[in-house]
Image (cartoon, rainbow, N blue to C red; front, side, top):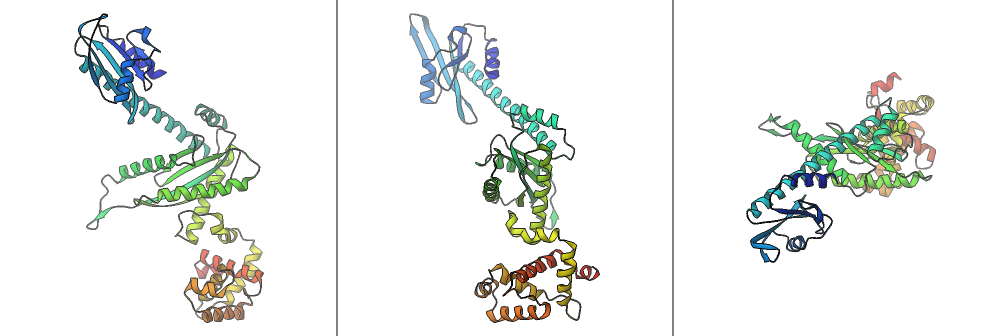
Length: 402
């Protein structure tokens, strides 16, 4: 409506003998130098829309004098037909018609840019407010309502960390334009994410910093959160596959818990970052870290001190060789066996090890520590914890000091 009023005002400067009508893509007039034509259909515009190209018509009838010209030209915006300019006069109809068309297309482009700029800035501001430690809820809700974002929805945060490849040539870093290139990439990634079939107008996507993009994903409140978490796995997997089509960067992503309260969204953000960091330390080959991938890593990060001091450290002490190093080969073999459902044949195939080698190492592990993952689930659980704990604490001297 605002655009239509603006175009109508633009036509008011044509106070000559020309009749100008502007129609929509259905040939319905919404602006004209003759107000009586508004809301009527233009047969000339219908002809232009059908042919999709400018046309010049010389019309001679009872109501018009000889050499009365009618020119119609389609208006395009974002490669889509927006409407038609039809101008009737005695001369210069082609030139004036094209000037009016060009002006309208410029108005549409500016409106798109201006509206998109305001919308993006407001949504970015909402996203950053939601991730502050001491959030101003009233201000945030006001902005959300302005953007027609429902504050009462369930939400979770997807954190996407990006590492951009830096170009080098003849061993000289080429920093010229590097920052602007990153900005362009961030913008393109943001647009790509926003166009995902799994996101909607209630979701917020913004650049958190030069190496991260945050998606605040919303869901209608339900009692069964398990279904939403399964949906999030599918959404993140899909986003990852789409982002993997660009080789200008490498990326990792993870998501946090679901929350209904606005102040808790920052918790989801911190959980997503922590999950990503833990997952990367455990296995840097994934692009999407699910909780299932790092279950034991999470357990080890928040161990009861008694479990650490009574079960883990004494067992690691028993695995030390005379030179003070730990028999990581035995723990790795035990973990391989456990990760393959306690199946020696499967572990042998996956680990490219002979069955007898696995059997011998498991026997040596039982001999040194008393832990037998082949016959006790409890022992298998402890062996897996030991392997993960050792990876998280690579400095064996630190282990000796505990």
